[in-house]
Image (tube, rainbow over all chains, first blue to last red):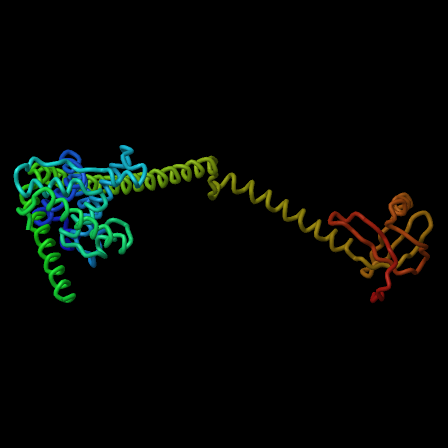
Length: 169
Length: 203
């Protein structure tokens, strides 16, 4: 990213996209629907191009990318007044995928049934971010993130056991 | 027993976390980003670069135009100043007089006029010298004054003039015979005033 931020070379941008494009889309898809996820993805990459000179060399590109995307998503929700109150965040659900009949379908159902903030924290952790990075991306306290992760995992395990039974684990 | 339970719990938690991670990765593998996003991004990158290039080009054009405009203004200003100077010069020097040696006939006339002027000058100088004798002795004071100067000349001053000078306070005080006086003349030899003089009479 540092090289791209200096040169603006398209080949470097393609490499960055190949490394993080799918992860970003999956993260956004888990927190919204396919249409909004696609829209926010495009806006995020556009922002990367526009603000490449603002990229801090010390930071991880993926964390910066996800921060941009998460901010855009929140702006979008606020713009359509779907996030007027923080309570509403818990009510936001992503698009359920058609994976019925498989353990993956059960996992998807369980994941999408999580409250927004727990789903968000869980996804970010699965993407390899540390607690500190998740706290920075979501602008939350470290302890809050820990709590959200604990609840998210516990809920998922319970739901998976309930729905999938012995197939799970 | 308690340690064994803890170990069992930890092992189960690890397994559960691994399972969640495995499921998450499987889910992600099935939900790839649509190719349209990449295409749009690359198209945007091209247009973004084009816009940047266009912006840079516009910047260069603007800089060149500004420089040209600056040069034009400077040139125009210089021309206007120069034009004004020439105009001023023409306005200030509309008459030209020619000075040269005159021909012989004219030269005789000039020589004659010059001689006349020189004679007048000498006469005036004589009068001036004569009448700028400031110091004199009052010889008589009946019906006008007679002033004897050092070079044995007598200057007569009429009573009317004495009265006139007294009226404008150019003669003040009492004068009697033998008094030393200072007589003030103008450049034409006209008496402007008479007053007592303390200066010693050499002659």
